[in-house]
Image (cartoon, rainbow, N blue to C red):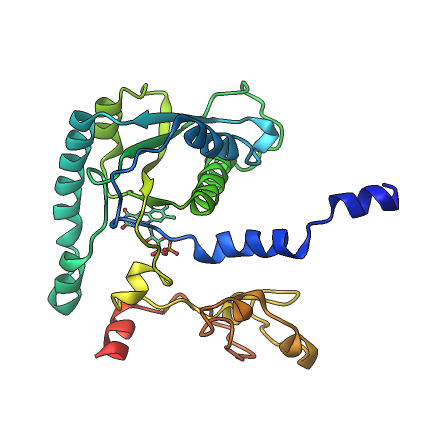
Length: 269
Ligand SMILES: Cc1cc2nc3c(=O)[nH]c(=O)nc-3n(C[C@H](O)[C@H](O)[C@H](O)COP(=O)(O)O)c2cc1C
């Protein structure tokens, strides 16, 4: 690569900042949807962004079902109500009360619902790179969702992922063939605001884990890092939510799986 080409390919500071802004200000959105329609060109930009995700063996296993029909949304909402009633039974006491207060979908409020699928047989029996980890086609489809989620944030469009649905029943409602896997059901629309922190964090359900607790050096369990690393700008630390990236934990061999929502609940009472 010539020097000139390398310079031409470089992101300007504002371009770089815009990418990080989309990442840090992306939110899972289930409320504050506006009735404003998403135009066809904008929708195509989002879907094309999704389609440009990486995929194992360049398999591109995704399809997108764009749902505007009110009756379909109503049927999906009904599936959510059933699945959520079942899910709520898992939580009792304070946690149960909090769970029942959470808003976990925006199916009927959002102008567009999007069902993202993964065709696990696309590309034939021998997909390059998938011989050891079969699920890489599912991972690829998740990458497509994340691309769309970030592009939507840049467009001022909120996206909410609804996973509390029986996917077998959902397939029947949306007409997805049995051989195809539903990966995500998303609610999309322009919103009046994006929150600055996850809804679940604001509700006291669970806190963001300090990133340093999740970084291991050379082998699992070693969180020790050199002094200089402390002094370097941490991208999480510099974005506007200044609480993040501040942790200075040095060794935490047991990992962070133990964090429970009850800890958050206690913390906030
Ligand atoms: C695979 C996946 C499934 C999710 N399912 C739901 C869901 O069913 N309902 C919901 O309210 N949020 C759902 N979420 C959103 C998460 O709760 C949210 O991403 C998390 O709390 C962090 O908030 P943020 O996305 O605003 O940063 C899901 C997110 C992912 C990635």
